[in-house]
Image (cartoon, rainbow, N blue to C red; front, side, top):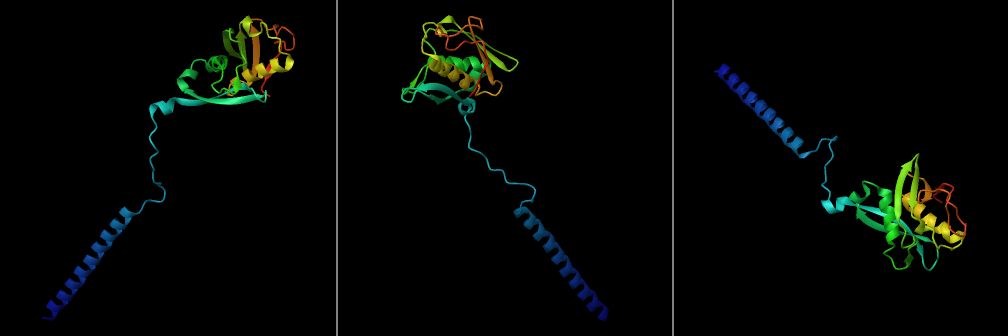
Length: 189
């Protein structure tokens, strides 16, 4: 009978130890489910962006402020696909169309045509038609503002920091009053 009591006590202790062990394992599994590992951060989803918003980009165009007679930036959102083939041509065409803000003035004459735009050795060569300079007797200061508006606009893009102007393919042209001749490289100021 003594042996039966000992076996019974040992069995009870063994069952209690097994139950405590199983309980401990279950407790740890539940605890680990409710805590995040330290090296994994929670991912918070961003607001959904529409395809149209994804394609939008901002460009800065420089026009003359009618009141202060200084250059002022006009920021526009355009479809980024429009900048893929020749971004500089697109920017110059936007300048040629003129500002949307009524307090700003268009600087490129109405009948001017953009013959070509090309990059060579980090210099952007802009070739305008003769109409760009024809009948422009504005004086050196105003002529420099016209060129500065173009230079500042195209140098907003990273690939270019120097600009050369051509008139119908010729570098030695300039405004009729000879205030500014296009025989030099222009840089952003």
